[in-house]
Length: 387
Image (cartoon, rainbow, N blue to C red; front, side):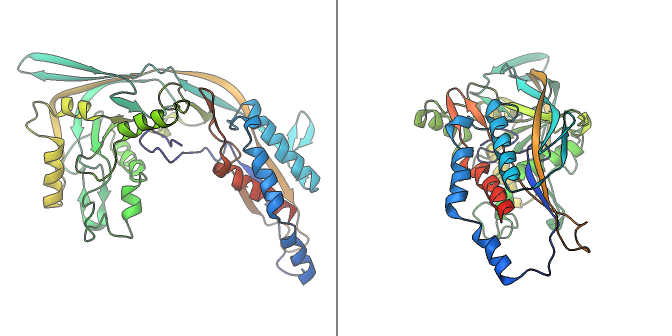
């Protein structure tokens, strides 16, 4: 599923502090007989694990999206398993002990009306190009209304790697500006490249690097990131993949029609909220590089040849980015239980084991069941409680 923006199609960022099912144990390392240890292991069975998983991932629970009836059923199910195993309740609910730790969250939903314009000023003239939401650009999940009108800076791959002295932000000022960066990293396919060697490859070429790019830009005062696919990449296009996804599963159009809901803790500091990441198509890239005397492919080749950054301010370029959200105060819950230890020296120490119980919910009639993400982990926690 999507992580915090559309470009990471197979990754999802989860508020684990909000949506978690956990057991707390204080376990003695001594005093257990071989029979008792065997009994614990034997309490774990494939049939029991499968039973938990199939129920939690069933259509009945409608994808277990937080604050929905499906998630509440899943939470009550987990609580009932803890109750059956005789675990201790840790929460207070309406004056009574409970396995459910209920707390408020802000639901944030995009109005699905994002706009993006590239404005070019040259010799007194002003040209504005407008682009279509979810056709030419895709704005990742945001938890507040976005309204940006700012100059543009190109910052290569948006990377800062002190180990090899590579810094795409050296010599440029990105404060209060929008930063254009390419996906991935230099040296793709070159085993001698620092970025592509086996120890680093996953960090720079499977999507995780985008979070580092955002962090680098945000720490330097940038307002947003425009993420362009690197022209020389050996990867399929995000926008082509989205079209293919619709063709393959007509109902599975989560990223095209229905805006995703996002949950935020009500006391989360606004200053810590991440800046927006907007995936942009080649048509937006062309508008940004028009009249700069450069091209994205040319700059990428320059970096590949020199192995040095080629960042620059895009003189005469501005972008206007707008996107509105609606918010609502709702309740959700953790499911928490404790199994007390018996060793007098260790019973006040805790081991916390958890998994996230929620998943993506339902979009346009398609249920995101979430068997592996994370019914499997939740089933393991429930089975471990029995063991």
